[in-house]
Image (cartoon, rainbow, N blue to C red; front, side):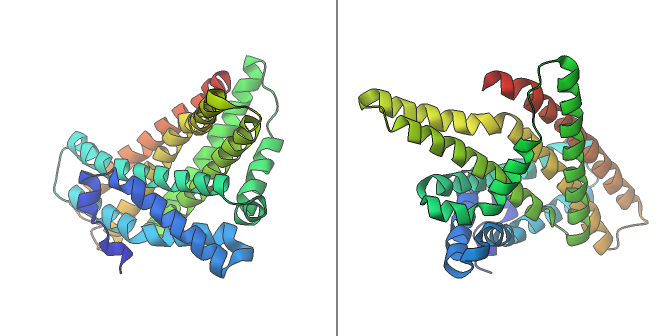
Length: 285
């Protein structure tokens, strides 16, 4: 495959910043193809094509991480090795998110309504359930809902990775498209307001709008997606170990221990992400 040969898992872990551009290229190519061939269903087809493009790299990286488990490393060194793969995945996700946001801003309004139709409906459904949270009790109730919903997504990531090898990439790509849509809407609305300004004030406002649009969702979005990647990596490692018939051996016990540590880590990160979303992001923006 052409896409599979663009970058190897080893190079991805050594130079994760390359994945930023690769994620943007995958998403942009998928958006163009979706509008060209499947315009009426573009909002879902572009997610599918982006996930399909990233699938070989994600699968081969998880396979490489499973092989590290069989080398008998100490757990702290093993987690350090896994962090290289997770860093690469995050750069890939950020690149895809930025590309989705970019296309939301630059295409026409009529195209936006088609290209991001499903994502916009999802965001509206989420916003309709959100009310003002003034008291600590109300905030804690909202925090519980956010955390439990994120845990549900994490479980899907683990199951998809276990069953399909790296199936969680579809869920994560979908999240990238939703976050990109939210960022794009924020930037596009801000740019529309900036159009009434003139001179340096107008230019400064453009930069401010873009920065705020990105930071508003990055504060809690990046750790949340990191948690999903950690869970997906755990499920994928177990799944590959089962495929290779490693179960029933002492090495498989080591893999289970490593996966259990990854799952606990993902839950901890999700907890922090939910705290940021409920208490920090509203205070900052």
